[in-house]
Image (cartoon, rainbow, N blue to C red):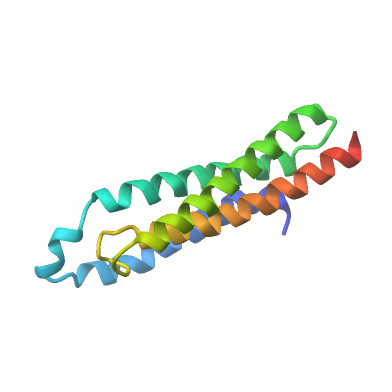
Length: 138
């Protein structure tokens, strides 16, 4: 699979995960109704996951674009942005996962924290590959 298709594959995987989670969400009992919606424990991990997702997109773009279409300096800057976004996702996601009190579905943001860590690792790998490629072609 080409790296150019990576953002579409990540989006499809995320949509498939949401589609599979829908039947489980239909079985929510009345007792756990307080944990639905955007709780204060979910805001931080959600924003961290969005930062890491932006790093994945930017890293994929930096890796997919050829040096003839954009300058190698631009690719290098995009690679560094992807690396920084990935590092933020891994570190902040790990801290938020370590401090979350409950498991999935409790409203403490453990799922968003793990998503931020996974997307952060993907962003780090893509940014690193793009940085190596930009240094090699310079």
